[in-house]
Amino acid sequence: MWKPSKQYLANVEALYGNRVICPINPPKKRRSRSTNPEAAEQIKVVTFARTEGLMLFSIPNHGKRSPWLGERERNMGLWAGASDLFLAMSNGLYNGFFIEMKSLGRKPTDLQYAFMQNVRNQGYKAEWYDNADGAIFAIRQYLHDVKPAA
Image (cartoon, rainbow, N blue to C red; front, top):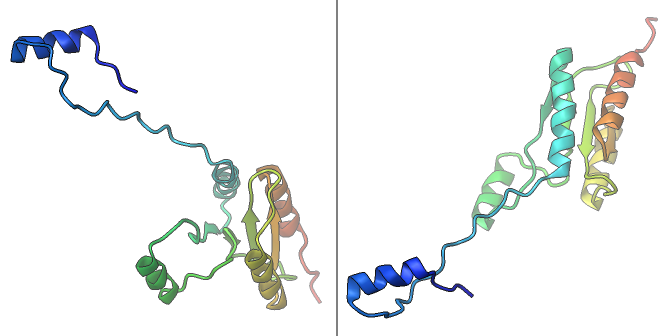
């Protein structure tokens, strides 16, 4: 509960001549920006890829939307469960590499597992990681697993 300060009461008295407590809402607390550990790990992976000149990009498929905006996004190609990142580089074994980033200790949803299985069936590599180091190691491994020339 907000309690007026002495200075506030003095100012009210100066304005109105008496100590009338005006029904003023207390100042709102500023919301602190919550940290998103998944985003922090994804940023590390993207930073690595950019410094290496890799064609890795984000698939902006997260966040809550209003029903209207959700329908509009689905009509524009939003796919529930799509992975967070896509490495658009073939290595001879796979057409590309879909990467799902999770917070430490978290696992993909059923929709995300289904998406990964669907793209694997189409000749893509698809995995999930709960830390940047694991994803970076997997990208390096993916780029070195090149199909030998026939």
